[in-house]
Image (tube, rainbow, N blue to C red; front, side, top):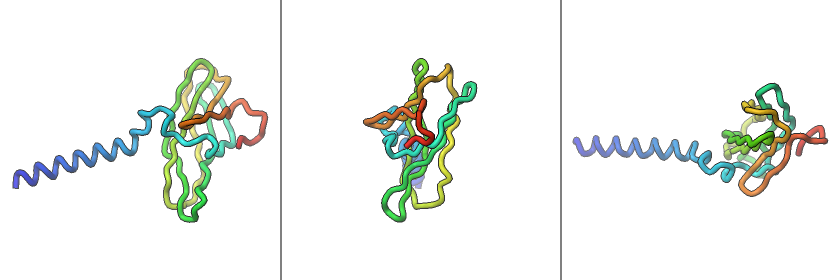
Length: 132
């Protein structure tokens, strides 16, 4: 009985650690596991005092029952350039009002770059009214 109890606790511990790694381990890869910037619809970028505000949504997958949802973001500021990587995950299609990120910044920002595994896209400053 004691061996079974010990085995059960070890199994639960391993599953818990595995779940945490799957849910948050993507952050360890920097921008490697972030979504491609082309798959994001950023509608507005605003800088207020020491906060960078990004509004947008993730594109829907072409299948009828699956959509992408926002999972988290990673950010790196170097000088006056802020690089943002957004992670999304596939879920059952539901209403998605979009994403509003409020990212604390340390210094004045002149450029905001959306970065994914193999590509980057400048989203601020933009000459367009809506960034695609």
